[in-house]
Image (cartoon, rainbow, N blue to C red):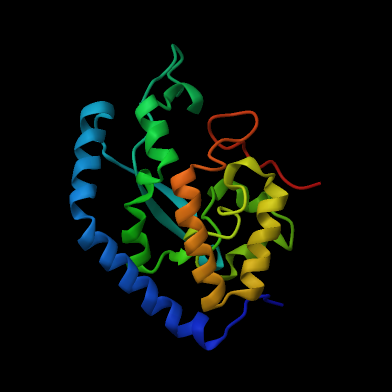
Length: 208
């Protein structure tokens, strides 16, 4: 049985607010998009936009758009070097300030994502979820989420998924507003950017 809360807000109002917020962000911050795009082109090269498939609502796959933060450095065997090596100082700055996520406004406008919801993770994680964890896909993934304002990359995968499921079960306008206000605080303080072992997030290998 689905754990999704299909209230009036979740079914109708939330989508309208998502569209309004995404359009407003793209119009008001068009100058910021341009500046970041130019800097990415100069410092990291093409493509400026990083595109990657991610599972969305009901595990439907969509392309997530972000500003590029890594180089295309290869080893002698033609394999991409580890993320920690390809992630540049400029890329770390984009991630710590969440500027790399600005293009996700397009995903929100298209209906792939919401402003608030569980973060869209890698497609390869889908077969690694247990039965309960699959329910994080009962709603649209979000630009920010309950787990992102309560530890971000510094908490365990299990803690993140518990928070995702709590959000899915209790989604409401007030809850979304609280998460948005906390998001502003987290972004400015740059909390929880790294895990304990890596500059990037550790892989999810499954829950025992």
